[in-house]
Length: 174
Image 1 (cartoon, rainbow, N blue to C red):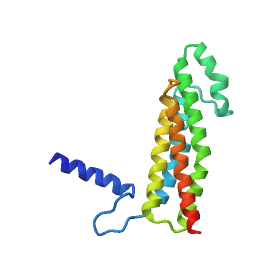
Image 2: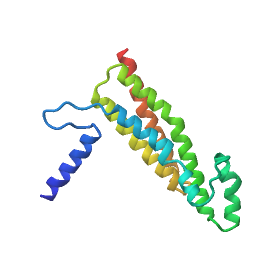
Image 3: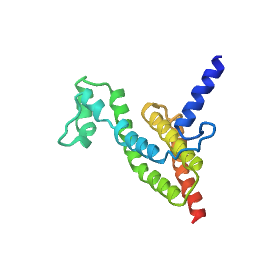
Image 4: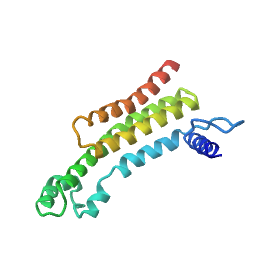
């Protein structure tokens, strides 16, 4: 009974992601949800603004300078720890990287849609990119070890390879 429940949950998740469809139904195209999620992830979830506001490091006049100008002073004053500042800096870098990478994903999805790639390919690429970017962001923010930080590079390439795959497959159909 438990196995059956887990299988239904897994099937439901795969259906939500557009990787499977209920029996007798066509596979839906999930391009727009993947685009919207990845935009929100890049510009919202990875943003340091909420954390900086909580730690009272957010200065709306020049928010991009918060960590450079006020971060070190906050550490010296004992308001935050060096580890918190370093994590915020890594999160800010992960945010910038996600924002910089998002246009390639948009281009890949547009090419995939324009060239008529199948929904399973489009959804698969969307899921691949999304999973890669989520894991990349987590690795960037939370991995402090030099040795483990190289996993970040693997995840970065994985996300980009998903986009390159869509571009190559779409290019073959032109």
